[in-house]
Length: 179
Image 1 (cartoon, rainbow, N blue to C red):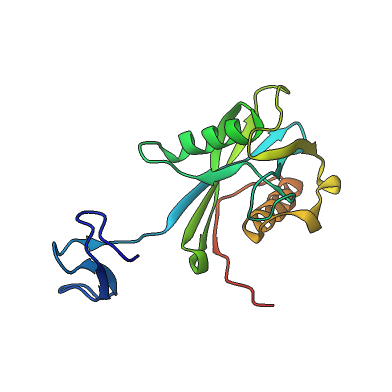
Image 2: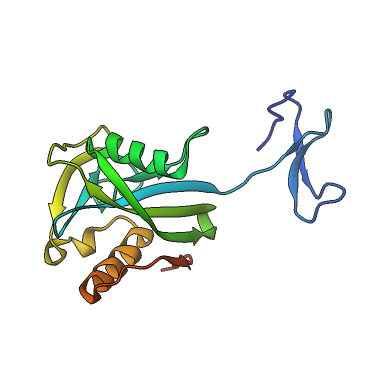
């Protein structure tokens, strides 16, 4: 951040009085510009024993598969955001189920919230951010072509728990992988 969104003056990175972390502070109007993690909402849409995945038409990870998900918008709930993202990416209508997982992804300042969901019908097709959408049995999932670890890990756990007959809430952290 270089300039204050309040008055346009240059900002400086410093620890404001009464705070413990460096923040961008305007040198003219003293507005403190807090930067907080982004919330990503999505769902695991199921039809019978298959899961709906979307092949990404945008970066990052263009061409790889993911569950319908994206950034939460202002003035919407977690469930509304997950429903909207599913509609935008897969033109799919879902009945949202229980909260399934929350993953912290601190190295990119995100928190991912996934719900279980049931497709309401088979009327789905790629949205503007998807090249393709398809239902997959567990054995057909393109595991090596999944876009993100934060999708792969809860999806693997989902199938394991489904085989065991007990789906439960999970919370975890995805650490940065350096190669």
